[in-house]
Length: 454
Image 1 (cartoon, helix red, strand yellow):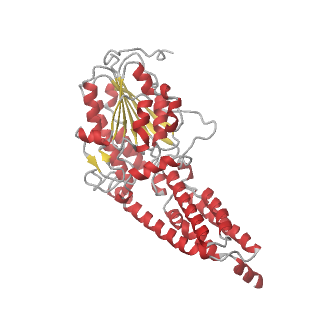
Image 2: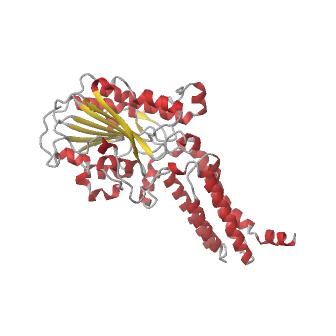
Image 3: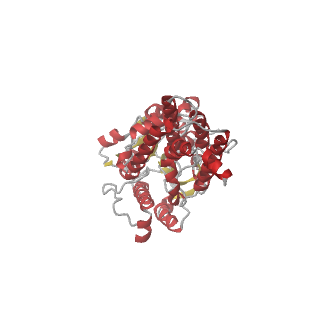
């Protein structure tokens, strides 16, 4: 008993509570729902916190703790949304452009984070320094317990967070598998649609909903249909460069390979190249690097609004995806040169609101019981179904000139809830290619790509 009492006396309980548990409580509460693994951050945090807690000055301790809290939040958001941790500037526009307080989930998470961070910053600097060498040993043991708890709580969804390709990973993309990285001699129009948060479903109900939207028998009358799945790494911009530039890379490096990107090759072959995206032109600097990789024209949120596209609300508020394919259809019909059109969707950014304007206020996909139990999944599939309907109207328009259509996901749906994440195959996104059976040229290209036949 005296030995046990000595251990209890030496255990730095207040340090463990105010330096480790309370400031990370918001992340730890997510264990019951899902969330990314935090073992690397917790381990680094503990080492710094052990040292900082021994300092004799209050304000330096408070500043160090504030730095730890900010870094942990930065890491958590980056991992959750597959952003590059090494690039702080990629997070800043993300935070400035989104409207998180439109989501109840984000409001609750922010309130918990502020409350726990404030309590820790008030209490931790006044925790007494460790009383003995045993206190250091017990602090390490306590930290190991926390790391073990995080590992166990996040092990089921760890494989669904894919930020960077492993060393030696073989490159694969839907564009290469569909053989569209270089224009052929047909001069047919090409439309590439990158779908936000489009995953490969694995559940029976989810698979059935997916197939109804994306496996339409009538397409085979007009197109040769191929489909599959490709690995993804990183966020949406990583997916864009995977499909448009044939590599795993960051958009900050496009100057090194811009001429090898698909839009640049098609432009060189006489195609008019255009891009559509319903969000801000400044988001992830797309207004700057889209022209670099070969897009001559682009239309973002304000441009699409000026063309009559409705506004759809949400955390990422912008143009309604379901209305953009109609604009693309008109462009293709009236073109006097072959067209490369790229469309990056928006509305399926998570979480998705219960919103009459989006049509998500009464989702009944999969039956009442399934829809009630899985509201976010239901809304995601509903919006993807709306997009599929709009693309179907475009692809099956009898007046549409010969056109090939590639539809591909950018990344795995980044749900908070591990139950929702488990409904999708980790590490891959689906793709679908509609190759027109009409092999006659759409229009005569104005120039030849010297690399097209190589």
